Image 1 (cartoon, rainbow, N blue to C red):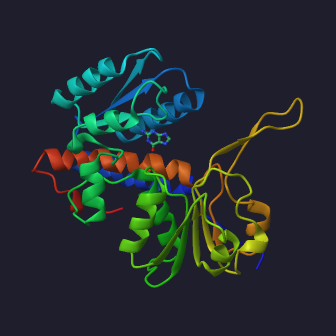
Image 2 (image 1 turned 90 degrees about the vertical axis):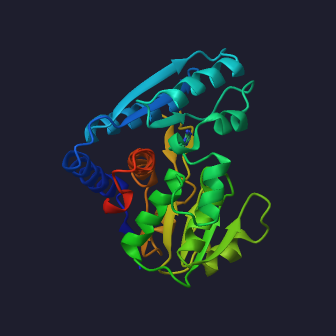
Length: 297
Ligand code: GUN
């Protein structure tokens, strides 16, 4: 093949943002509000949170970032979340990960009111996702990945999909999302022995393992569709800036793939676009008068 379609996440995220902005305007939703909690000085998190905040501004979602010190005690953070749970003007709450080691991620995720849990990490929302109940909030990145896959294949029923990674943020909900779209799903992870064989069989590969060069050209079949969720910082030689790469060897795999998402500019913008969509869904779940199903994206 050699001329894979490059799946431009910035383009599709822009389309979703436009539709969302129009929907908010036409339904006169002016008070939709997201509160983001950022703990500590983790530089990549600061960048992600800034991008989320900028995206909210573009579509007309009010957003406030609560920057809390690295040394904050777990109890204080939980109390902060509880105040936002109770605040009627707050529709969505997002606590940026990772958290400092002395704070339990699980306790924090469980402290967020499920109807405001725009990350979809609360067990109530995980349970609703797995049991295909429509009135939950579901993780943003898997929704973004399926949206990109659907640009190539609107129907993936019966196709062989391989998900590499089993995290609660991406891998696990990704596998459920693809299963619900009737794909035949294999989940691989760090202990998987025959990754190369599994890759060779797959019609669709979603890699969210966090290892550069994990998926090589020799491992994939002609015409595969590849979604790269990896964000890996690779140190460059002296005097050059460190580079961000995905899990997939783009040069090699794009020679054989039908379509491939780049890093950066692939899944990243889609995660943010679906965070905005989740904010709207949270608003609709909280206000019975707007039907989320009326939003077409
Ligand atoms: N850190 C990296 N990805 C994510 C995400 O999707 N949500 C949150 N809250 N933190 C993250």
